[in-house]
Length: 631
View (tube, rainbow, N blue to C red):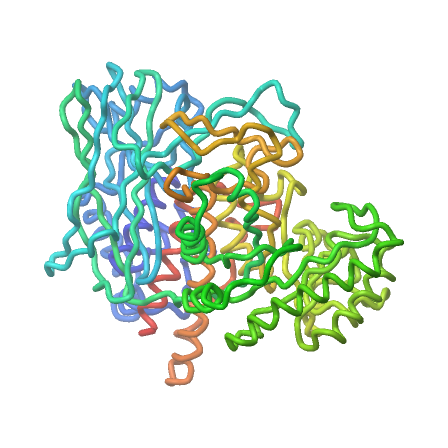
């Protein structure tokens, strides 16, 4: 039943009102949505003039509008039911007793397994997507056969039009098939998994039709990009599905564009690796400058630089390439990754006898690369990554090398992921490391979290990162993990813990196993998801397609998390602006409360929600607060 009331609350946010306390209480939302003192907008007006009767009237109006618009279904599906029982329950809910298949909306943060039914969307609802200008946002459509398998299923999105007659420009709305990769049950994984088999992840832009066996489901991915000048409002359209052996069906779809825009360049810094040697290897003779730019622009659209923090030997970049990257939003570029001598925690460097010569070569090549950046007037993009994940036995050498690098490249930041829980306060590393990259778990453990907070309070720059460790209960990017984890990590969790940025070693590490080729087929693809350290998806968030990069559920949720973080930043700016305009602290109490991530969304880095609608209603609250503050 609380799910029922959360759906009412979500609709109230879409229409721009607020939820009455009695509904919020039933929805388990009182800590966030009920504010008896300082709310504003419609609810505040009713409270002051009419009292509790006004709340009841408001609640009844919301209920009526929700039912009229098909938002609230009478029941939900138990995700533990077998798939055939789940489908029959969905038929009962929607009343489509004679339908050979159903179309069911789903959140973008849910992985819908092809042979299971753990969906969170409600049968009978339209698909609803809400986003700001200059934002990407998606939803899913589950195609669920009931009485027969579906053959040669084709699909299309209609034009979306607002009541004012506005539409989206061509290319702003894309409908694609969600593909699957198969995990291998004969492999011993580096982390616990509860199942093997086919998992949804690649989003296939070129697949135009598919079959769905009667005992399976198939998901479509609808992605919307609202450009900077997109008029705000709600746009109406539908998703049409046409099997060869069954009648066409449509799912009503609504896209709400908020009256504010996200910044062109993401606020939350990232240091994420794209390995060019893996791109060149998988494409072979097909690899060229045009394909390189397909990947570069793809990364930049997702809030990442076309960069590699593990950059070593190689020619300096071309001036034209650097200028074009900067014009497209590139923020940082690694001059060189310097290894520690001998075998380290995560890599092998030159022997001690060869190390001095190695450092001289590094300095020579890094200087050549820096000269290109300086010619472009982009010296501030440069950084050097030093000694990956080293422990105490390497700290003295780290300090020695860092001092040499600093003398050769004054002002160029030195970044390191050295394992020092005191962040240099005892070891002296704080004198030579400009930016720290620390493992996610350190932010969660009280004994290390307090030291990180103290360091950041004193002016240290501390990014967080994850890799093959830590696994669950922490969020991670493995194929088997929930899609919502990537979004929470980059959005609500980043807002709660306030790291200075995010680091990840690689997203194109495709060759820990032999024989990897371009992704083919679909929806059930040929791609082997097994990557680094007997894990599925570690270091590999995207796929190599014949025409360029293919995105994934994980990568889209990563970008959505970065965009969620912008909502908090915009709300903070809107509150500060409203305060300067003389808006009272009482009226700003409620929007200020939204800057605090509720514990039922993120209690800590190992205890967080996996319910898509809970996260979505919080996001809608923030969006409406931004609009009401007139930002």
